[in-house]
Image (cartoon, rainbow, N blue to C red; front, side):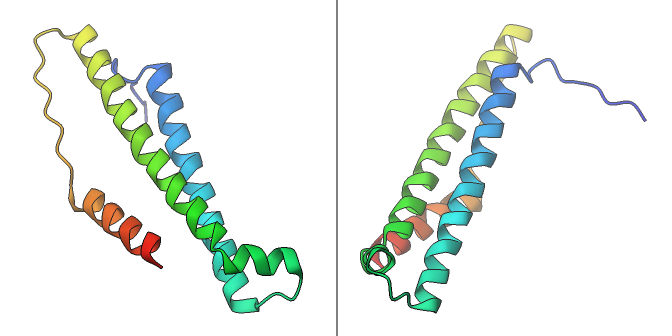
Length: 112
């Protein structure tokens, strides 16, 4: 089985995609830490302060906002790479329901 690399997948695009994956993993970790703090109910002052002020939730929201921003940069880089490979290419980017679900989740998470 042979794999072909598309000409529009440049090192910049790959690094941006890796950044998106990293931000998502860190956001999930932050969310899990917040959940664990809520379930355990820590007694230490610092952990109580973190739990009471919802710091893991705030960090999660900021990381998701950053991930969406990097998604935008990835789309711009992909468009540039496709246009440099084929100047007559027509590119249309549409957002599926997942993008709206993330936006709604951010709003719900920020109200909590």
